[in-house]
Length: 333
Image (tube, rainbow, N blue to C red; front, side):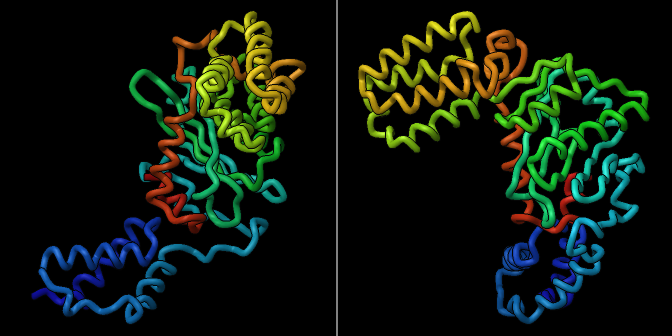
């Protein structure tokens, strides 16, 4: 029988080196399962507490110590380049707007070659010290590809602008032109303003899924869930969710009909229709051209669901708020 104490402990340590985004406890459990499959017995496996010091020491030796604040963050040289020795780190902005941006010239060319982009953020797997991970993806008829990765300290417009300014400068330095025809983002004014300023000829659109999600959040907030289950109400709510697919010239009339019909069902819906009116229709916070997709229905996806799928995969492979160094290794892969 193999000795787990030597062979498999080395294997566990090796896994930490090769897949450093895997939590130490998960690496241990995976090695235990592997040993049981291969040997049919767990009798000689030491419990986690007896070897955890060794495992955590190995993990600590792989990466430099993470600083306590962004102001003292220094990215190790080997993490600024890809495995093919291409430049990878293109933005390392100092505090107070500490922004990291990663993309290789090869990936940047993919971004240039594809006219339709998707951009979105995630918070669960943003490394310690940062507020959110942000990524830009390209879309073609075959797949959605992640090509730009970033870490942002907040959701302020200036942080998005720092990232996009660095991205366009990086492209110019590599003689690459970035002129997207369209960019799909979340309903976030800071991101909308930054993308609009940086790419003034691009059509910036809001994700239709997030539009629907925003409506349903208000349905819950205004305690309309039970009313929303009634057949007549479901029809009118479906009409609201279909507004992004109408020709812009028909939205005012369509929404007026919705307001009349749904208020006849119950005056409790007036809060919901007032929210929609002020946010999306009449002198709105988000202009109709931003959330309406009629002009691009057959051109590109209307949602960021593909990007959400990428983030779900990232969430499954990285621990919550991981150490920055394993996160960089993960995106390099």
